[in-house]
Image (cartoon, rainbow, N blue to C red; front, side):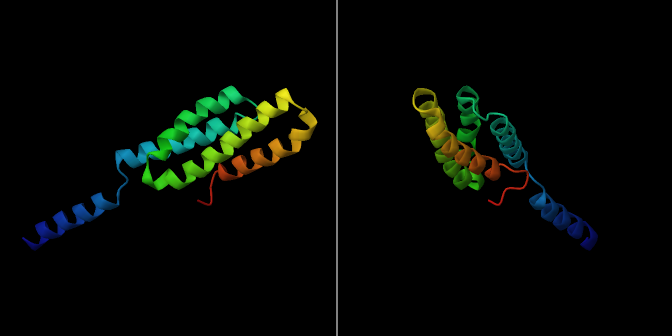
Length: 113
């Protein structure tokens, strides 16, 4: 009886530690977003498609803070690219580059968040 009880308790504990399918999906969404954003430099259309993944991450409590901060950076970068096309490209090049570096840094393989 004790052995059976120990097996049941061990199973429950291990099941609680194992990642759920939802957690795995969220992790895949984060990886997909990072891959998308890292290939989107200078391309507003590609950035817009990455935004869909970012919106999914916003709905998950574990990634909500990251997604909100990242949304601000991506919107700033999109505005910068638009201003660069319509205005003085040289004047915006440094600003766009700086914003892009922030985006890349937050999507490195092991982000600090």
